[in-house]
Image (cartoon, rainbow, N blue to C red; front, side, top):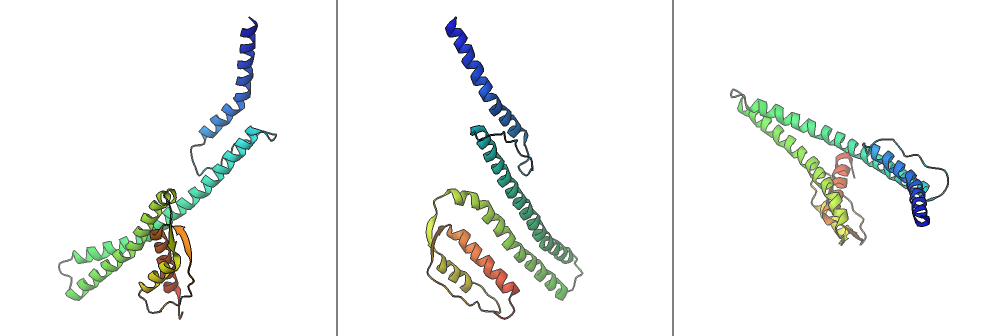
Length: 196
């Protein structure tokens, strides 16, 4: 009888101690949107439960920031894709006109090509973004960042020649993603540069 009473007492004590954890779990389970501003209540004190709630709230805050960045990127990508797709559609509609004179037909073909060329970097960025997670989880190799920048600059064609001041620099990372980054930076610099 004594052992039975002790067992019931221990079971009640353990259930009472775990009840706040179960309540915290249920509240966390109720948050379904990772971009939500909802946070878990942090119980008073500095025990394990309070630290767990604080850690979960920090995780929710990071998820919210990440979700905002993802939504902004999707919005920007959609905007970037819409314009060249509309241009290509107009050019193709013009090409469907059999009575279109040859000079205007050539102009429509050039516009379609230009629109498709503008789609290339956006699609490449989307593919690079999809590789970020798997690249971060894989072993990063040691690469020469100065070589990547030099190759990206030499491979760029534009009216203004880039001026480079390089120093030997080795970093750990994915060479494909770093090459993409260097090319994007140089493309943006060339697009907005006036004399240098």
